[in-house]
Length: 327
Image (tube, rainbow, N blue to C red; front, side, top):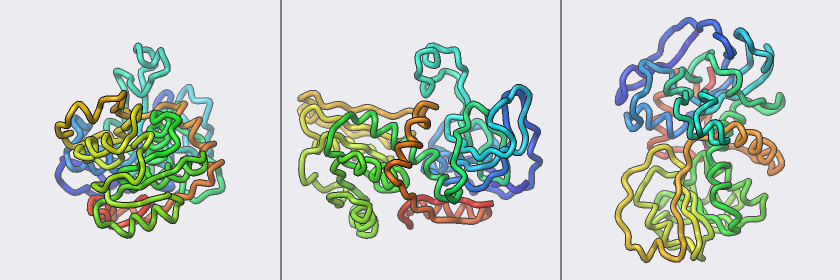
């Protein structure tokens, strides 16, 4: 099969011809239909994430079809259409798994990081990590749901029931979760890279009540702020934007250092918290919510061989929506 390999962080991905191994116990083999390109993939390639398995095939927003099942797998069956997200495996018995917090598992596996991912024509995945997907939609529209959508959903849930939500960084995750928040009756403000008129217009088309620069003051006090951009300097700005009792949720796996800020900005029971990975329960709750909200993703499609271009375009913010690779 064709694949794009990361040999060393800080270097471009390398095209390779590899043999897909047979699935082991509890695993399935997939023919990849599409794989989203996530900012986490960019952090992996840039060396921001420690200890990847090298060489590794990146990609953790995988839409594929089961071609073979390993020993002990009853579902999904051969022929089933499934998604494979970032959390690729858990130990199932640590204190976090035992209390429904598998996203904090002490011995996890991550798709496209410690396990080979979907920047390829095929992949091997844990059967119990796979997410059932509908047959109708195009694979390229489903792929961004597998991480951008799921992480955005977890971040929105952790934000609480506030009705006025600010989204800092209007990329793959924000353009999905803005639609769900609007369907829930919330008012959504979009904060983009300064001067990014295209992203601001995109946010307004998706129903955001306001869109402006990330360093601009919020037009009204926020109940919660979700930060998707990996920019630590946004945390103090978001704290200033949230009302008393408000919450700032940092949704990225990597963020630059957060600068100091006065205690007064945190006072009045404001909170800062992070999102770590996801759970199978997140997927079970998110997929029906996305369907009910009529979520439409905005995929920008690249051939598999153009993975390096997709990563560079993501880094430079050259598109609205989400980059997706197709074999």
